[in-house]
Length: 519
Image (cartoon, rainbow, N blue to C red; front, side):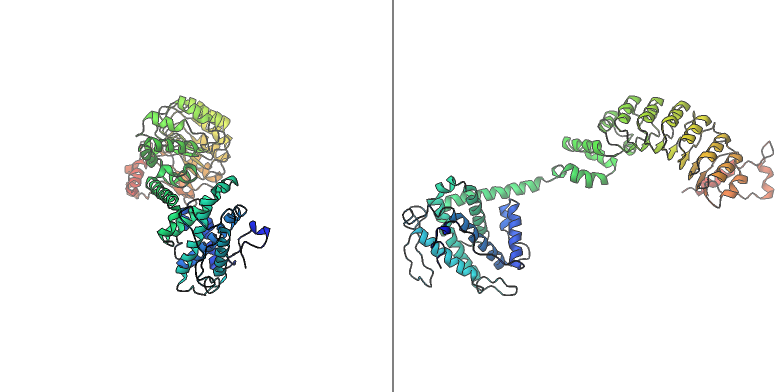
């Protein structure tokens, strides 16, 4: 049956060859379409790993046949017997038709007639299950690649004819981009698998050389991109921040920051969008300007650790707390350069605060603690260890305003007494951990009150508390961990441990035994 002749509708037609769904060739066709859609033609023509070359060539041959059907269909009204009396590709190349079966001797014919013969013959080959098997398990013939080469060689002649005789009409129709992309795909494919002899490509050799040069440029660009691939070329927020930087500690990030300006900018931007900033491990190693450069861009902080950052000042904390109102954890332990002004700003701006560590902040006054008590209601963990100026009244106000306290550390605050213990026993029913180590004025009475009313208490630290004895600790040992061990004193040794008031002093003995247990 004639492929183009017979009706006017033949001038616009649809591809006639379809690969059945559910077959492996259909899956390969989908793979080819997907890789072609990526825009990388070099990758699109490569044989997929583990696939059969015959199947890959068959699928692409069907695809090229369909593409050429559509392309030639756009110029059939211009490719007439009068306009194209011979099948040619420029003045130097003329094609005569012979299929070796019905037409054994080459005949001269018009371009429309030649292309009609050619496409009808190709259609017959594609429909022949002995040549192009579509069923699973049916092998390809041994001479399949030779037959595919003949088909692709003849399909190339249609491209050559369109480019030489009808390219102006293609441009007028606005189809030149489609034609160029299709031909580029075709050439890359036949060159990849050496399916057409070089002499057959002569009519478009100059154009093909430009495409091959472009292909080489593409490969060079791809290799260059791969060679230049590095941390900074990856998507920052989606990849680097989400999967790499989050796995590094801040010491590693600061080391990385020193490599180059681009990485420095990347690390600084990560700090600006990170909900956690922990400078404790690099506090003594980074200069003030570097540390401030990190802090000044932070706007979404939830956890802030500035332990031992002695270079921070009140003027640094004011904007930091103001632009991070959702902080829930702050560690200012050892920050000797601050004053109550920073604590007041923290209390005013960060009312969601749950964890506060002020260890060794000897500058903290009772007024600062009272300000915290006035504005904070969600504290769960507080550590005021070695804040010597803090007194009973300020801590009591904090305890009363934050009944959900679970951990309270008051180590080495020498002015605290049983009055505070009574307040803790009355309010802090959820307390799990309490440290009053070194608080010499707290006695057995205070410990009994806490032990009786704080039923959730699991850890009690009373090391170096001179007025606390086994009278209050013994009943508590079965339900909580106490850092001071039980000491059994032989009767003959009691007299040597008596102090001037007639009480047994255990401090020296306790310290020696506790130290012996430390790793």
